[in-house]
Length: 140
Image 1: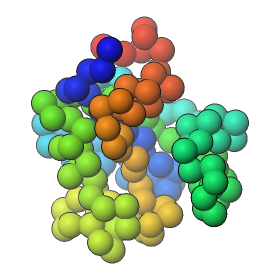
Image 2: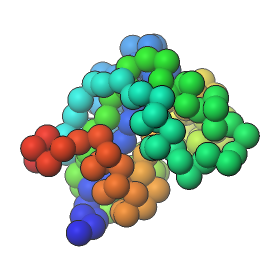
Image 3: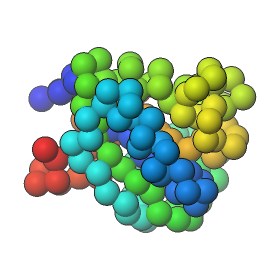
Image 4: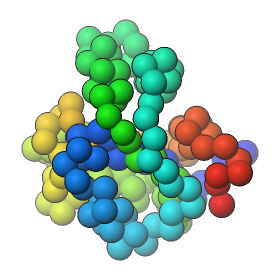
C-alpha cells in the first residue's frame, strides 16, 4: 500500500560531518513535517549499491557509493499532506547553485555531489526507501 502523505529523507554524510543535523531537522519540522521514524546509522557498500541501484550504469555511481559509506547518515520518514512534493520543494535543486534561497540544499550543501540531503521523488519510492531503512516496528 502506498501512503501518499509520507516521504523519506536522508541527511547525507557531508551534512552530518558539518554538524547540520539539528538545523536541517529544525527546517523540516518548521515546514510542518511530522517525524514518524528517525535514526542515525551507517550504510554498508552493499546496501549503498542496492539503494542507488537505479544509478548503477552512470559514471558517478562509484563515487556515490564511496560518498554515502564514508560516514554516518540520518534517515527519517516524514508525514505531511502532499509530503513528497512539499519536501522536494523544501530541499531544492540537486545542485545547490541552482537551488532556491532558503531551501535545505542552498543553505547546507556544498556541491551537486555533496548535496546534504536526499528526498524521495515519488510516493512509490518514498515507501520503498522508508522500508529499506526502517522495520515496521520503527515506524509510527
